[in-house]
Length: 447
Image (cartoon, rainbow, N blue to C red; front, side, top):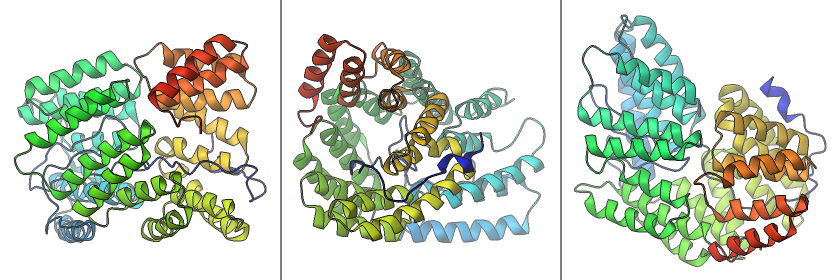
């Protein structure tokens, strides 16, 4: 499939306005330690931020300070890499610095450069060695599950095994791969293995896992326990815990409580665009669309991210500013086409919302199928089933949603989507039951 051709969109004005709820998962955002030796890079279980272990070079009093610190580290790493182009470990250090900044900023350009640097490192590495863990991290960030698994398999063949901390991170990453594949029992088992190797190392992942498998109260408690267990937390880590608490409330319709947590996160680690976007999103849900529009303008200015352009355009359309909204969506379309060429697997799940906004259901459905094929976990199944129902592909929609329902995945959105699918396929009684269950988990899910 030619990814650049997947966004062949017609009229710029969308047929329908998508909800302003924008998944802020276009890049896993985490500060990462930059050391003089290869080190495990934390990777989350789902597309949400992973905790940082140490502050960015230069400190992390704010997002801008952290970003500047990573910029300085990258500049130094580039100089060393230019002076020692044949040393793969030096190239890996540059790649890690680029990955760290990319995870903070969500920059696909940093990811692309990191990949180019890793390619050089592999060319210079002797047989049986190389930057496998850094490459596995990038593959996982970009949703290339099989490729990530191959890198981890290569580490298993090392003559000298990694230390227990890195072994724990590898087990956690294998758990993430299983999670994205929809194999939740395997994911939970691997998180347990990580905890056995390094106690507490998978607690954040376990909290995320529980938040998506119907145990939000347990997840909330685990986030708090995780925070209390940290001896030297960074500002971004503490802000991230507040962000995750807010997301739990957001997913269960408690918007005001969610906004409180997002504002606390912003106070702890000011300037983090991911927190600012969640504040804007929740502010819009609470009805203050003027303030949300101002916030989204700032986020778009800082990130140039197409999903936030689409969110801003939706707000503009809602108040009748069609021309400006069209210009924004034209800009975002061009950026989505670039992302689909650069990192298609990481872009499918978000670019499809852009297609929906343009009223191109077939474009959205193609991307939803590709997203589900790349990561057949609950969220991808929910979205695919919903679009299949809209397209009148009822038998396939029922097959997809039943597959998710038979798994451990349990979210209000799953149950609401199941209600739509069953209603469209003649299962009115089951549809009503799913609807009632969804409303118990999130009273606002059908708003």
